Length: 254
Image (cartoon, rainbow, N blue to C red; front, side, top):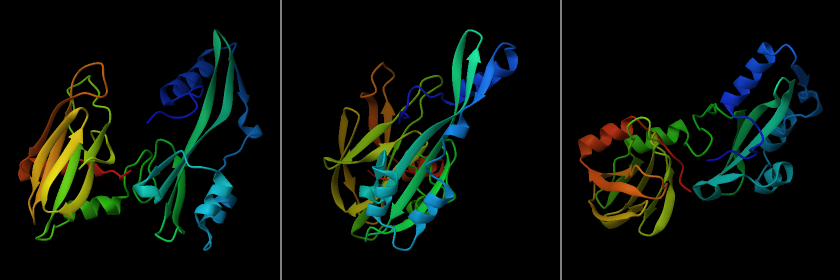
């Protein structure tokens, strides 16, 4: 997912800006962070964690989320705050403090979890920015044993040989969008036994969802200039699928 605020520096450029300030004798480092503050202050977090906090409270305090997952059960927020400005030499740069915040709601719309962290770090429950599910969800999906009248489905994206990026793929099941995965995540769902249509990229397959069993499906990105084309979409054996899932983390559904 592309980060908002393209004028702000991602980590490599932030590091370069810091090195520039150290190496350039004529450069001036201006502390601009004193003029701004994080929107996710301890006071704000206390408001959002109060017993009566709900979706309306969160929207009043933080506005609309930049991303939602699991049918709106999770709201994600992102903020980039300038902390230092580097002036001089052959140009200028800005060093930023990038944060994200996640809120989880129960079925009644009440806040049951709220936490923030640096953009490149995960939260205490194992959830990471962009849709990686909590560690408990990952453990549940991997240990799930489908009943006799249902199957468990695991959808993931294969890694490509270096230096080709696999990117992200959106999966569809029976025509409905399920969610996105990268090469280090997977999507899990359980459904009634029977025929199942699975689509990813420009590919679509039909597979048999056998009761009491697990179905593993792998998408492979075509090595070309488009992010929308796939090279393969295929079910795997239980052994190969379990091995692949064991090396990945569960992703949240859309």
